[in-house]
Image: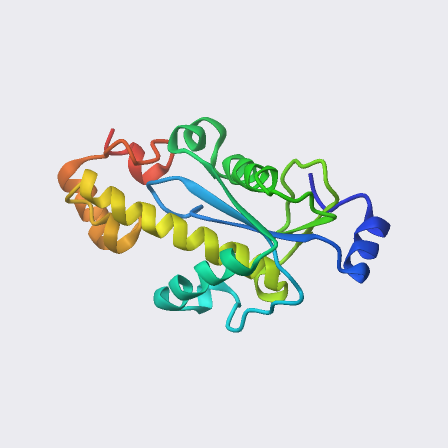
Length: 202
């Protein structure tokens, strides 16, 4: 599904500043690990300084902001798609699934959902896709920060279960060190077997 068919409803929700949820996902590019999405409804009465595109923030800045977002947001939730789902569905569909799960996890029903990118996940609520939304909509930026910190923490923890791959450092992305580890060790259960760089080691 692309942009919402209910443009009038979404414009009205924006003007009235109702419960607007920002949604974004992280982890489409890695060769290993889940894709994780965040959904955040910010409180307009409680602005959080420093929230912007997560890719423009340092890891320490994201780690500082994530708990602030979680504490001060009206509602927030995470959704995910596992490696097995990524391999079955493909990464694009798995990303939409993770976002749909994040939206469904919100404790408050959103009046409008704003999603980063060109495509919208399936949801019963009015939804609009915004290209470069993580740079334009603070709620989307907040969602990306929460999702990014959660996924990074998970990959750091999984590094202990799958030593030698360097997940703590690269979080599953295709760095030279990661590719060298794959050459040396072969894939582990965290690796996405549908991805081309992994297929050659199966």
